[in-house]
Length: 152
Image (cartoon, rainbow, N blue to C red; front, side, top):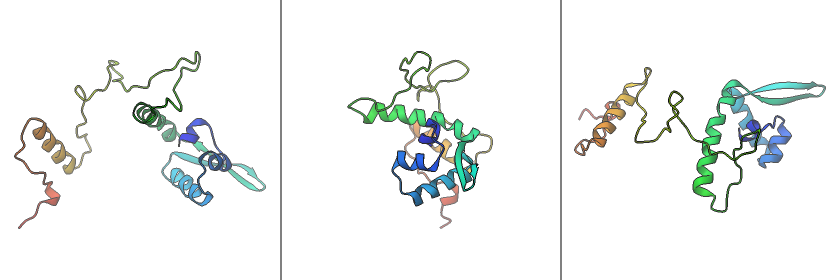
């Protein structure tokens, strides 16, 4: 996905950029197509040749790649950044940060949390409730999700 987001579209480009064996790359590209992140597009019929284009779902994955790049550069690159995000017009380096789209505030652990959504399964609700009690200081409880509780 990193290479597709950078602009590579052809099998040989992906293979040369990544160094991944062709059989493994074929499987990975097929999985990305099956999962809806890439689409296979014919660019030559004789012989049949294909490119891999990002779908809307694939383009939306860019934020994940940017966040992982920022995290890796911050914590695992003591020699300096291998890649960096810059403003296109000015080439000014920028630091990627996740913010609340309504108020622009950084999404810090002390101000924002994940909670079960409208489609959450009972296990998600149990897990959330357990962790809320644990954060509140209840260390007497045991993590025993309903599906895992024994009837003995």
